[in-house]
Length: 205
Image (cartoon, rainbow, N blue to C red; front, side, top):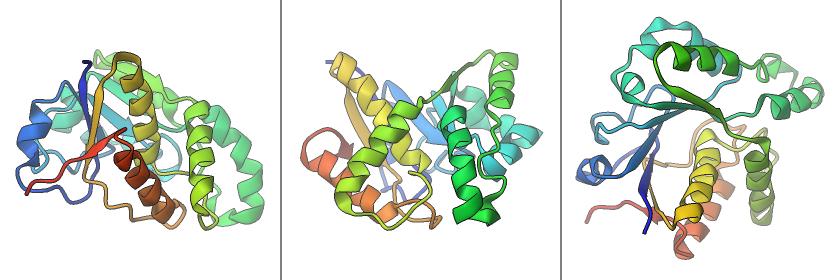
């Protein structure tokens, strides 16, 4: 049996889940790691939205890199493939001109931050993004811009777990937020993965 991997979103986390999170082999958190503390403290990977305003803010603000979970992590994941988002730019100029900076990429800045602090940096490939789009299509999502960072990370972790028969757990996923993500379809897809035994939602009775 392989690693126990926990993907911790920034939503509500059940009481008692922190103990299960902190004994996992690998823990992934997101962006400013709002799950840290109430959702345990172990942090191995911080998955960041490396484009647009979130990417600019995190990569340029010293406060972000000084966060305890960011300092503790050994790896930073940039969840958006720069080439994929470059390809999206022209279409968004027509469909969503207000998102003029949405595809601006800061993955190089995160790579420098990682290198300067003895961490690894990895860009999650566009293949993961496009596979997520393909799975979401089965749930007839409303028009959307891109899958959430959480879903991209889940797909990446499922790939990792498949290679060594690992177990994937998730918590802190409320499947709600920015309207440009297809959250209803994402919830249905993740529920399907759970029903198929591909992952487990952490819930404490």
